[in-house]
Amino acid sequence: MFAKTVSRFLVGFSLFFLLTLSACNTQPPSRFEQAQQESIAAGSKNTAVSPNAVKGSSLNQFFPAGGGEYERVFTQEKDGFVQAKLKFQGKDVAILAIFDTISNPDAKKDFQGATEQINGFPLIEKGTNNSAVLVGDRFQVSVRSTDPTFGKEQRRQWLEKFDLAGLSQLK
Amino acid sequence: MTKPIYQLVDELPENNITVMALKTLDNIIPGQWENITNFEEMIRRVTGETDEQMIQKIGERAVWLFNDKTQGYQNALWLYQTVDKADYALGAAALANKIGEKINLFGFLNKITPNNEKAQVIDLVIKIVAELVAFCQINGLPGDSINDFVAALAEYEKESLVRMAALVCFDAIIPFGADFVLTIQSTLAKLSPQELNQNPVFSQVSRFIPGDNPENQLQFITESFEAVKGWMISFVTSNAITRSGIMANLHSFIEFSESQFDYLAAFLDITTNYFEHTGIQSIARSLISRAMFEV
Image 1 (cartoon, rainbow over the protein chains, first blue to last red):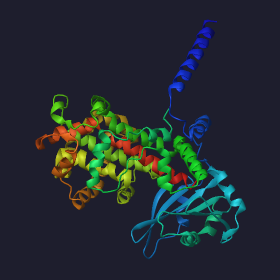
Image 2: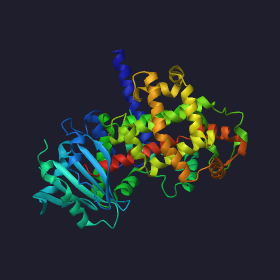
Image 3: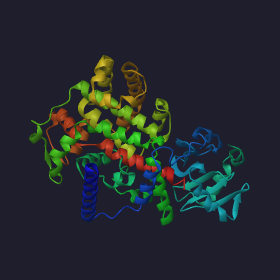
Image 4: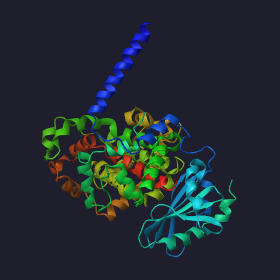
């Protein structure tokens, strides 16, 4: 009984305290607040990345090599994700990436209305200065320009240089 | 529980002693570092994205990635915070009301004790190893890949580059002068695993340092320094960095005399948290750069 009274008091007090605090808080809530709440509710491990995502190291082999005045430098290798930057004459021009959408299947939705293809795989412009193909209904391969001299045509040329057919066989 | 990544970035100070000290390094690495203290602004800068829906998705994906403890970002954050914290809280509080006026070091001489050489060296090499381990946690390389890290140093830019520049200038050149490599090597050669183990920062971060006992960890620390020293020397040489040059830049907001470099080093040690400040920015940049391909 006592415990119940105490807990009621505590809940009441906490609510009062929270309301007072939030009334004083003039900061508008972040536009990412909801994602934070949902993520915390989901837990702290394997919530963003599926334990079934392929090893990052297994994706490296499907990237195009540099060559000529182009240099490819790997920058991130995480579960189900690998990223490299592409330099031309020593200057960053684009970022190349492969993502295993098993960790975020929503990423595949954008390809449903695709009207173009590369080597038989659906191709779309996704966001700003970014071209992507969906390989084997699983791997999103992207090229994002980081320099205005590297345009849409170049992005598509570089997407073709990935070993897309090889990647489509990866389990 | 760790704060959300957007809050960590949004709460970074726009101006304090850390920011003023880092800005003096712009003379050495012009245009490399901008003090971005708004997460949404960072998304726009990193991605070049103008599509609001994409910006929303990228931010949300970054939030989820940061909160997933299997992904290493929180370990990196903890490392960046821990190697900086030892004396910082004390010094920052004492100077909170000093922003905007020129700080006179003479007024602090009785409050500051210069570190002895050994403590200063341990502080520096632990920061180097913390950077190496945090880099591997953020970018997904095995924690003992010294060579991968050294190769990546050549690609360092923006927040990461200014952090390493601050390490070289404030934690190596100011206390030890141009011969910092020799001083660090000879101190490390004399250091025993027991002495290392008694260092409070080491004992906190040791579980992240490869090697299963202080003896092996000391060896890893020594190997890391030996691998990174080439980059440090070339950074100093190619940018013509000198102690007097760094001190001249710091004169823009601190009054001190040229002979007080040991006090200046201790002052910067207790009043700045540049590892944590730029570390949060590096983590956010890396998360966003990944998230933009995962939506």
